[in-house]
Amino acid sequence: MSTTRTKSAFFSVEPNVQLHYWDAGDHDAPALVFVPGLTFSGKVFRHQLEYFKDRYRVILVDPRGQGLSTKSLWGNDYHTHGSDLMALVDGLGIKNPTLIGWSCGNLEVWSYLEQAGVDSVAGAVTIDMSPLPHNEDPSAWTEGTPAELSEVMTRVLVDHDASQAFWTEYLTEVMWQGDISEAQIEYYLGLGSGCPTWVCHELFGDAILSDYRAIAQEAAKSIPTLMFIAEHWADVAEPWFNDLCPETPTYVMGGHLMAAQYPERFNARLEQFLETGK
Figure 1: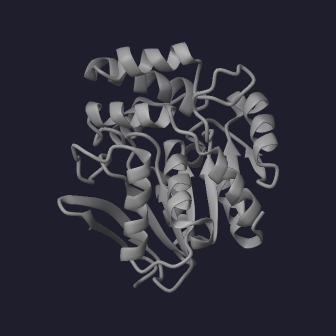
Figure 2: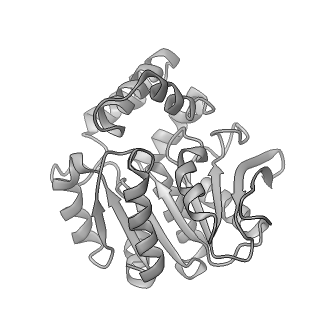
């Protein structure tokens, strides 16, 4: 396959459920599989695809319920997302990929490792989400207090207009650092528009009740791993994660959408990891 051509395609992970993905680079090259966060399309990693496709096979995934992938009435949970990703990787003939998850995509990566085994991959990179998103300990790295997460789950993500307002605020106040143009807001919100409110609600509920600490620790001790952490909560997140997984290097930069806002810096650190395992 030409390293300059990017293929948009679909793969059936079970009857009536197809995952959409982008595929670029030489099929014989080491594979990088990028998994986006809640609601987002894999297209959020377009800068990484363009940067790495000349020497890696790069796969950008639209998880079930997101982007152009099937919106199914079942399987809107991260155990299923992990098995979907396993089916896609196996179906594409990929051996020992490096998995790169962002936000809730981390949960999908950890779910894959939990089900396929840590020795099934060359490495795992996780971007800015705790393996225990809900924790009553105020010193822990969480997605918010129990009261805040309850409000989002039961009052916000049950309504389309409230959800839109929530994602707009989250993009402009948490994901992006500094000024963001109206065109950029429209673009990034558009990357999440393929995920219906009801799918987002189911995935969010599963995410905040997930606990992937054990597999994160196993991976840290067994394979090359790396965690990116956003600057706005690094004072809490970095020491908490370093205590949990001391073998995993952490790298603090940018906001939650760091790979898109600062692709040069992000790609340089990711390339260092791919070359050294650290």
